[in-house]
Amino acid sequence: MADYPAELVRNRTLFDGTPVTVRPIRPDDKPLEQDFVQHLSADSRHKRFMSTLKELPPGKLKYLTEIDYVRHLALVAIIQCDGKNVEIGVARYVAGPIENECEFAIAIDDAWQGSGVAGILMLSLIDAARARGMQKMEAFILASNDKMIKFARQLGFDVRRDPDDPGMMHAVRTL
Image (cartoon, rainbow, N blue to C red):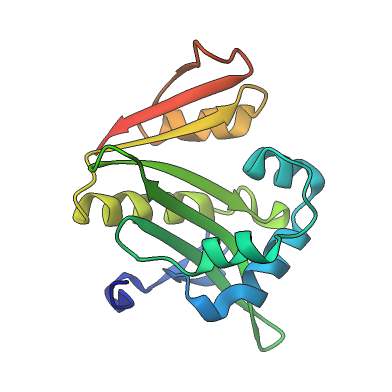
């Protein structure tokens, strides 16, 4: 595993002026990540995980937080609420079998959708992926997820119906 990439830690401001820290996830973020997923609406969890899980099983939680920061990178958006860290969003990429290609996923707490945090996370993730040698990024999006399809297009992804699964859209972007 690569050293923690502290150079990716950034302090940003959301549209409403809320300060947010964007940083790579750490193994000790398991409770933060679990709370984040549990706090998502059933619809948001379904759109992100394409299942009806209510919380992350231990193996999945470990997979999502114990990463190598090169072939698997996750950036979390953290705000302070009543003196404690609260995760309001996460964006990640995982490299595929082709060395310089990766797949991304993003989830934003329902209360923070439309706040600008998704754009901050994705632009940071795209920059980090490019810096780690990724040349192509893709995602598979539920065809019913209109907000995500629009967002991917705004980020410059070419979004088309998946020919193998009419219920899915395939978003692709050259980095």
